[in-house]
Image 1 (spheres, rainbow, N blue to C red):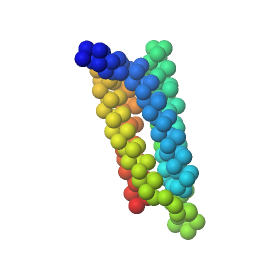
Image 2: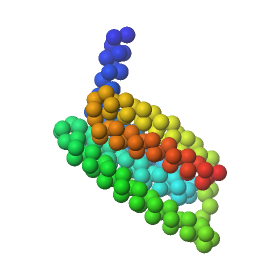
Image 3: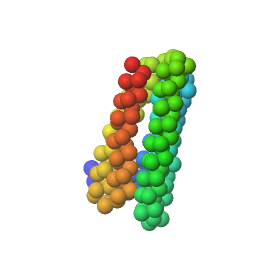
Image 4: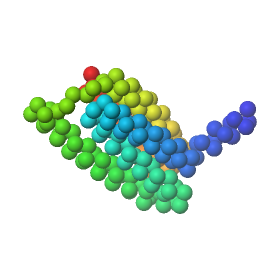
Length: 165
């Protein structure tokens, strides 16, 4: 039991949390982009693009923690969130205008979109609590700011599901 407890404790460090976040974000980016391209879901492609940006940010966080440059990585994450928000806003407005003009292609596999976003929402809930807990315990502003982004993915995933329905 002590061996399992020490294994769990090793995953509750800022470095391990950043590494695990990077791996999960990369998996979600591939899953969302691939499924978005197969289904033709613009919302899923946009979310996949955001997940790709999250993967880059997670790598920056991991490096910032590893090399004791958390303030720099926090600033880069905040800047990345700002850029991702602007790009998704632009992409959303462009596709809404295309839909209103009657030029949008319908999605072909709404159940795929709903399934992938369901997995992404569950992952975002896990990441939110995991990053927030480790961030608060270790006083890591970088992990706490990442947890805010993870919480935002719950709303994004829900919006994509609503769009697919």
